Length: 77
Image (cartoon, rainbow, N blue to C red; front, side, top):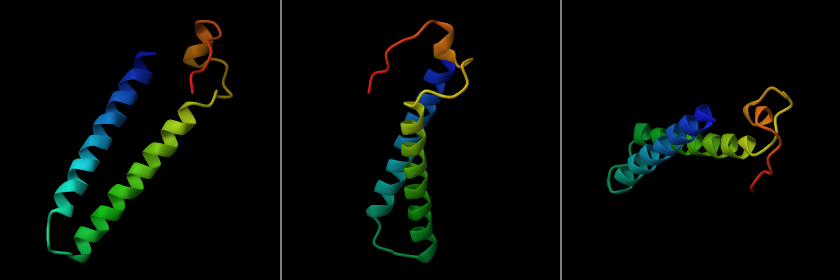
């Protein structure tokens, strides 16, 4: 379970960083192609994180996964 907590903490920090970078860009009046590309890359990464988090809710096929070791627990959605 520590791995999951560390991973969630890491994703939370990454989301915060990406949002802060997007907020800083929104305040700028210049609209360079590089800046726009960076915004799109951050938006894509946020979508990837969202997908990864939704996949974490699904029970994996491998029975040796962390929550199988401690008995069967109900999943909270």
